[in-house]
Image (cartoon, rainbow, N blue to C red; front, side, top):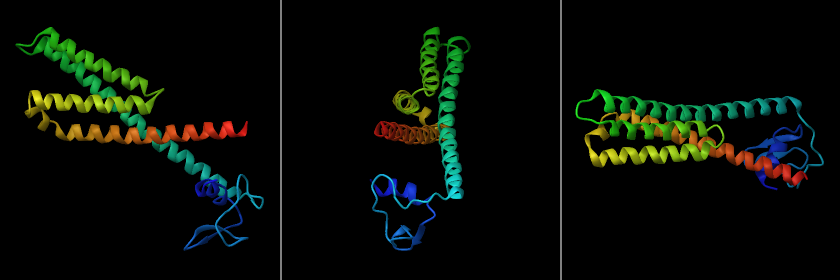
Length: 186
């Protein structure tokens, strides 16, 4: 059992104490936890358990919020490409319907990835980030001036997607841990 797993018990036990050198310790042994599985001297501190549960809910909501922001970024990018496709196909002189169709396909990819974040947030956001960066780099090669135009928006989108990916990765890791815990109980 890892120290982190032991601290899940110790942090909500009435027997806990704090040592400036060792951190959270057992008040009975004046040392860090050494138990495996369940502590035989564990006494639940209901107030701390309630505080810890509220903290976990808050962290989960904040993590979900970052994933939602990243999902919205994918939808915004997709919506932008729908509008650009419309402009290139019908409004801008010298452009053809083919340019609009290309933009609409790109929009469809981003919008599809946005919907996919509901079931597989980590994978869909990662693919969305890679696809977006590839598009930005492609436009950099084709027309270098486009890289500078809207640079702030590009940076904001990348940051939002990266934060969403990190939270989705953490959420996925927690789900695997929860599934492993459930399997251990069987």
